[in-house]
Image (cartoon, rainbow, N blue to C red; front, side):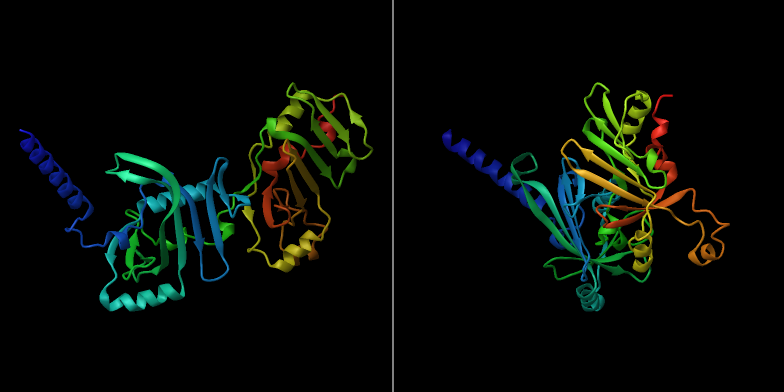
Length: 353
């Protein structure tokens, strides 16, 4: 009786082993899974994505409790990161590169490609995807993204350590994948200038350079709506102010964004010239952790320089947009009055008559 039970148990174990081998070694596939599996279904498990080219461009995108960060310093553009994660999820192999083209494609990938490293939070023990234990961060994929195929419908990609490159595409998308794996930090930076809740704000200072008497500083005293407003021109305290207007002012710093980054769109000489002109406003926000965000704003001419100089008395400055220096001077950006007008109002707007 005992012998029969042992035989049945042995048969069950052999059957389970056969199923495991059949699942993990699909002989019907013409592709090598280790070389061709570029996609990741569970993008929620991705913790870091490192992208670098053969030049000086490098971008490290990291998932944090406060959102995605770029190169450990800047908030990343959530929409762009989500788009990248969706790309990684949808990647499909169209076909292996033909033997005739293999050496040429590999050579081109070695000379000009973008390296992508993906890290995930994965279990050390994964039993049939049923029992997962001992999670840790691990680099799970490293591949190289190259140029496009002749019909512009596929992208050459090669897994690190693999012998064969593949033509990769996204189903339903007519184009190529390479542009979605940009190594340039500017392509991943968030457009947010200020993003603070009222509870996180300690003080805000608005300097109106053209009208110094309208410059002021607001200090948050407590969460009950008590504030201290100081006139910067003479240090006097404004005691009679409109609480509701001031509350709207402070809550307006939740999501203020610039329009576009100009670091690589304008010549360095042009940017330097603008930075040496007199600014029109500066905004300095200090949060409850004593971290400071400072933005310096400069007027923008409505027409190109050559025209403006000839008709400077007739042509006003741009009334819709202005320039800004943010991130401690590391980024030069274009901003809209439509977005920032609500925090650029003069001191007199908040005073009760």
